[in-house]
Length: 301
Image 1: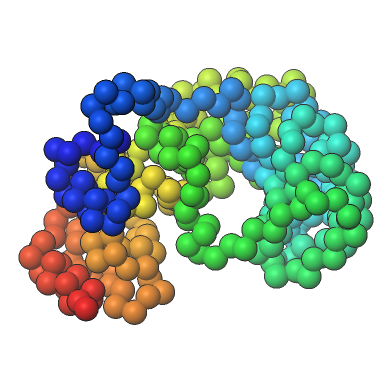
Image 2 (image 1 turned 60 degrees about the vertical axis):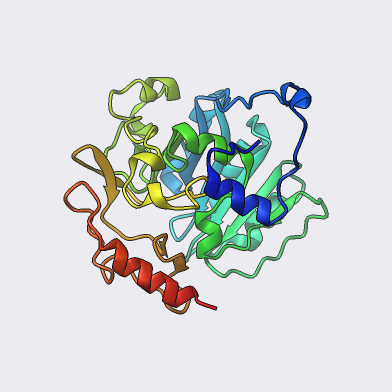
């Protein structure tokens, strides 16, 4: 349902034929949408760099309250670590396993041979450009056709609900690197333990540490530039937010500029810096009239 008080949105949707008018006596038939996302897990995604050292500690993740795993394979991934990985996924309760190949990983053929009978859903991110030689006949393999835009945008209802109250990248995430260090994500600096030093590892104990969740609840509405972006409900942004006065901002620019509705690969794109849009002071500074003229020129006709 669209509130007619928001005239701009109402007129746009109506003009496009995307609205269906209903009588007043049917309004009560539409229940209010519950915008509270329910994820009954301590962690939604655990990202794990698979190395000789880290793979020896995989058994410590058994019986942890984790929804999904993303295993990273790179030059530090050995044959033995792959074997330990396969043992782990055959025993863990997660229905979906994500595999990410980075440059330097050379044992893909061996890996696919070992997992050919695995019944779990396998999602593959092939950033290494490796030729996929998968002997499995199971229809449970999905290769993500990533490009930079797809990597940023996640078009689904759960992501929409999560974005209303949380950061869609850092929320409910744990990262364990090849040296077994435990962090919120690959991008964050703070280390909250090491699997090598904890024989009785419990993910819930890590989450109780005061600053571990500090990025989880930063919404796009709290973040300069992002708060003005039409893709804020779809965006999974791994840039680290930085606190500036009463707002959050990013030191690195996004590859999309919402003020001219252009991606960096498109003709006519201009960065925030080129448009003299400044966020360093904790608030936005821009020449709205000049930007409006530039936008009209880019999109005329």
